Length: 257
Image 1 (tube, rainbow, N blue to C red):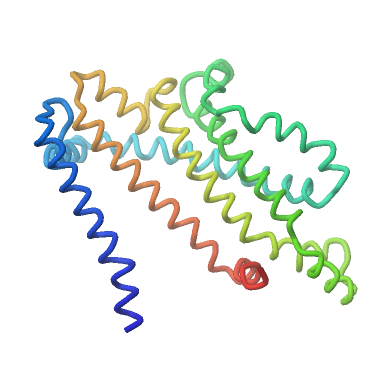
Image 2: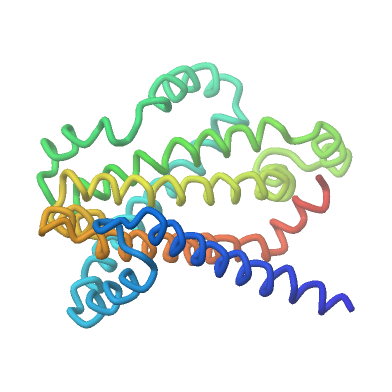
């Protein structure tokens, strides 16, 4: 019975909602008699056209390359920085105002500066993804450390855990669930930003493909097909990063909370 409910929730409901969405999309196109906006069948044909031309694979690789490097660099810098700033009161007082002041600036606003510094290409894209990912990761990690219960710390002190041992065995595991959440949020933001950045400041990638299809005779069937590809890749990326939650250290944090 439990397996049946799991199957309904994980398979039947998503598939059913998707089918209803496609039917609603088709009916909306029929009722509106829209000649420009494509229906599901026209979008499917456009997707086949993209696959046959093999162009989309190069654009997917270009976008994923920029997102991967920008995201990994942001995680490599943001997580250690967030741990230090969240744990050390002096570092928090010194750096938190700067972080909070820069955080609200949209990564899209940095596009002119990115192009000025790196030109049109991968460098600008990686830089923008770094900015888009860095602040959610850093702020999320800071909050995770500062929200650790004093009960955990006092229990560790009773076992004579201090310094790096306390950090390794208590702080990091307890903060890990929120760090994983910040990584998921950052990756979603990064995927949004790279598509927008490629539409205005790059000569390859899925965002560039959308802009090029719109300019090439208003091929909105190609535009919508590419949008669906972007959404599907976003789902896959989220599923991949959620696998981090299976590690024992992360489970420890969830259980204790």
